[in-house]
Amino acid sequence: MTDKLIIFDTTLRDGEQSPGASMTRDEKLRIARQLERLRVNVIEAGFAASSNGDFECVQAIANTIKESTVCSLSRANDRDIARAAEALKGAASGRIHTFIATSPLHMEKKLRMTPDEVFEQAKLAVRFARNLMGDIEFSAEDGYRSDIDFLARICEAVIKEGATTINIPDTVGYAIPELYGEFIRTLREKVPNSDQAIWSVHCHNDLGMAVANSLAGVKIGGARQVECTINGLGERAGNCSLEEIVMAVKTRKDYFGLEVDIDTTQIVPASKMVSHTTGFVVQPNKAVVGANAFAHASGIHQDGVLKARDTYEIMRAEDVGWSANKIVLGKLSGRNAFKQRLQELGVMLESEGEIMAAFARFKDLADRKSEIFDEDILALVSDESVTAEKEQYGFISLAQHSETGEMPHAKIVLTVDGQEVHGESDGNGPVDASLKAIESQVNSGAEMILYSVNAISGSTESQGEVTVRLQNSGRVVNGVGADPDIVVASAKAYINALNKLHDKSDRVAAQF
Ligand code: KIV
Ligand code: ZN
Image (tube, rainbow, N blue to C red; front, side, top):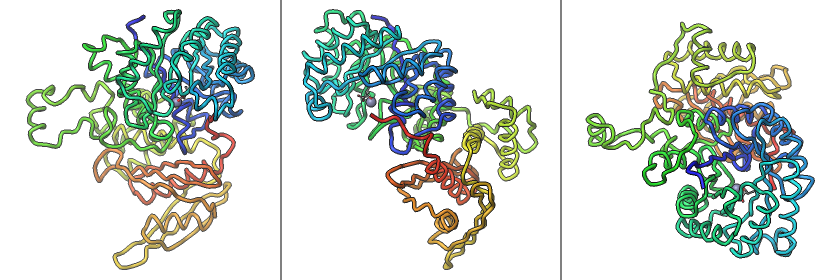
């Protein structure tokens, strides 16, 4: 047993399985680079066999990332495993992660297999994978609801076949911390060769206990790998959140006695990047990365913090990457200052062309907003990744009129397949009128299932960041747009979502 806790990030695989969170190859690459800067030990880049798009994402990430192990999920069959190995060929360090369900319910109803068949398939899958790669993770899906003796038999067999990590997921978020910790501990005791593998936990958050369960799996169960996602992104109520697990282990080192390799100052930039890319807004009171996580509103608290920070703060905002919210650049700042600030924020744009386009956006924003914060730059750069794609629809301009007692009216100019088109409409409010004006030209027929506005840097002078979730023909996508004018931000978010709906090929999230 080591005293290091391995951080396995699955934002790009399990996180992406949230409805609407699907990402393009470029977006995934950008997040993978940020995860590498964060120094996560393992990046689960996708599920190579699920689609050509996912295969290419895993391959591109494997060919780019040097400091973290890159992993692909695969079902327990030769075709999936061979596909994963193929996608990971260029990785400096690669891992195949193969899984099969082991609970009575999943085996009988989902797989329609007997326990003996599952046992054999798990063994053969790991044997096949181990012939292709040295680093093999085996997951027992719905492991926590499995018969512990059967699970122990499978774990022993796959370790014999060469599995180097054994992961016991609480797939449906059913566990209770103490019980889950005991389950992992007892399971390890029942597996005679348990010391030949690293034990891992993977908890979903359906009862809000994913982080607590994972910590119990570590403390009571002796697991030394935690699977988690940025902002706790993931199916249904999400996964164990990376920022919470890492800061719990670091802040309470006295209790856990474990080291993590994570550069915690990269946590907030990673959180913002994932939130902006997927359109999943971080709730203000979210631990570590929520806007209020370090805000002290009550007079007594403020007084205490001014006298001695540790009266009410157990972590330092700057240690998790909250910039001091300083004004960093303005209207007169030049291209070099902009480029340098991007570097300081850890943002790497691919080409000179991308930097020039981002700088042009920055100048445009600085003309309209006197103070530019780090958060503005991060939003603007994420927008840049959006516009770098080949787009069906583009925003040009918006004019809208609203007055008390009168029906708001909006006029929009956009591009459709490169052609400029003009639309106008009334609406219940200025946002409604603007989106109806867009629809008058686009006729997407999409249904809006979520609309939300956030202030990027916290005041009325801030840019508004709008998230729009659209649904059409069974597909769900999130669009994001930022602008000092929230009606314009809404139009940009809507257009961003329409482009994602249109761009079918690239955005099929890995599912199994
Ligand atoms: O939740 C789960 O069981 C999973 C496995 C595939 C690891 O995501
Ligand atoms: Zn999962």
